[in-house]
Image (cartoon, rainbow, N blue to C red; front, side, top):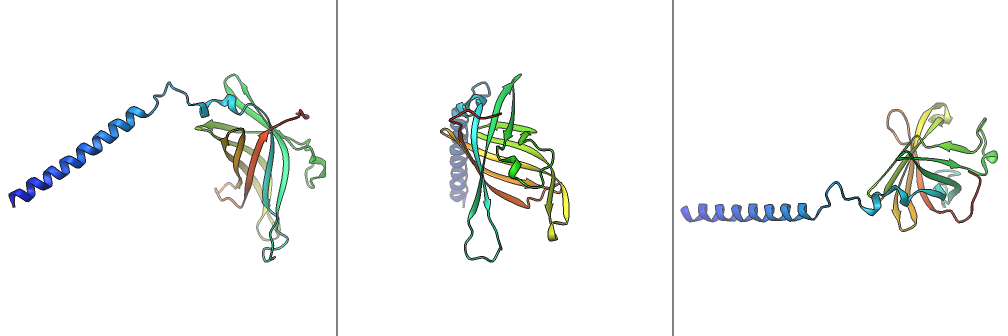
Length: 182
């Protein structure tokens, strides 16, 4: 019995020592807080991007084929006083119904960029949802994208006050090639 206790203790000591070595080695390989990774540099997203949002185009939930709708716009990111700012411009804004008083521009209310991940939010004055669109309330549109070479690839979602996400879709952006109205 004494041998099995000593054997168990030796086994546990070996596991503990291996775990401690792994932790110390892994910790030594992580960059310290003063080192900034390339993907944390906001300069990598500064400028104009041609963005495309997509969502399922439903005539009816029960239809046999479901195409997607793609909508293009421009998004702009700037660094002002060390803080990321941005806005969008939708050139075909006059064609979109129920948009009184909108000139196609929309400022981003929050922008974060870290570890190659971009997250920005836009306030929406009103979203219609529920049975026959009877419910209307303000919402936040959140875009989350990962930088991949010279592309931003991700998704968007509409979030209501209660945190629910009734609508969502895909989002992608590439560096803008030609200048366009800002």
